[in-house]
Length: 271
Image (cartoon, rainbow, N blue to C red):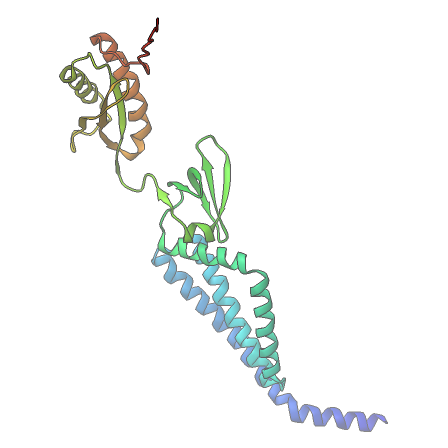
């Protein structure tokens, strides 16, 4: 094959496919620019809607990748590539990847649901999957919490989105449930008055709603008194610990006994 023949083949190829390639390249460049504008517009809209930053980044990346894949398929079709086999190959690859990563995809979907519906947010104290701690970071696949003794726990989002999650301090106020025992020989009215006085002296205890103080049971060794004051959620543990300490001091001053467990043993002596 001589040079003239090669040149003629190249000229024929350019005449037949050159215009299609130029048009496809123009569509690719313009489409790439349009995708950038679309992603910027979606980003602006999500900023206005105060969408969680992690969810916003994931959605922007997902939208960008999907649109670019569609654009590349259009480009390949315009230059003469058989797109049916290409789409079938991509579908098969996607199915294989989905089966291999089904656990990760479950966590991915759970992360999107958590970031979208916001059952909890960063800074909340939650109890889930046997762990209690403060949420440090909500990632796409996992949620990082720090336990009360400062340990890090990574919980898969699939478990959080499909399981029970207790948001400890979601409400602005909380009720502090406590129970104290007094001796059967002590005066109940005096003990209840002391409890009310201790709660009234605590500035962290809310006056409205008022605290509940009532006899909740006759124990084996004590009369059980249930105490239920209300406080701001952030003051929960301060109220809990201070009430135990101050009530013990007040009971001691008034001569109210917090009894130890007791058991009467009768010895029968046979002749």
